[in-house]
Image (cartoon, rainbow, N blue to C red; front, top):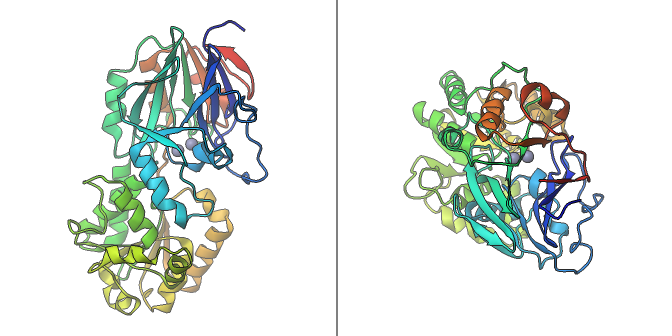
Length: 419
Ligand SMILES: [Zn+2]
Ligand SMILES: [Zn+2]
């Protein structure tokens, strides 16, 4: 190995999930993302073999987190707590808000937040975060410079979401002289070269069609942390004359976006209300966070009002909440919309959800688009950056890169290479 910038993809060269990249220069190192593989259990998964994690040599200067998806942060709870985590300010606030509500929820002990476009230094590494369009809010790619070399880490990206203008802006003036681009390829193997994903605006229109043709309540099973999708649901609800109902988890996540244009149960958004399912009421008490509901004063909707409000409501739900609505007699003429990856329908919660909808004889639709760029946009992205080496990451199909992109050099997990 030379003494220039060295790169090792510990995980991610042939899978989506568990992304982890280590960069080493001049005896110092940083780690970019430390995710949990998609189907893995945290307890059963070993941290990558990175000096400073297993020993105390002080060479690890910090971990950069591209965004708040578990396939990027999932192993962080296993890190020694003294290690600094560098992440977007809104990512930190959403992770902290969501932590009590999700199994294995986490927010870093020691963190430093960065801003879009503002470079910062970590020892010999100079890092510039670039805010990108992705289904995860506040998601970044990183330009990392060290020892005269320039590496760009794509993070998770797309060009068809609500932040599409950011993607276009990036392509118009990408960082130049890139030696190595580590680029995600989630859509390879899922779409043919010329197939396109629907845009988030297409999704809004399809949601609207269903809302217009549903007599009762519309239930949308989407992730509350997919903020683009929540906005699509809200906009379709507004266009169809309906109010948006969310539970305490979604309410806290939406408030944590700290972004004016995002709907949330606060004074400026009179058509966003909070419904707290029975099980969640117990849960809030158990977790000692029942006082959160004080923040929803004047914008709560209670079980007894659900049936009468059903025809003018859309609710963002998690699968288990459907039983609560059945108990409240609010499912007459309802439609349930599955608005997340359809692979989750095969999970226990997904199967139960479909069964509950069938038992209540309610209409079932799937309306979703990917959080990742299609091959067409990946091509535009890689051509704009025009790197000397393009190394596949975050993909099940690294073999397809060579047919689509220029200057591809494949790596394997755990192998070191020069920038
Ligand atoms: Zn992601
Ligand atoms: Zn990812």
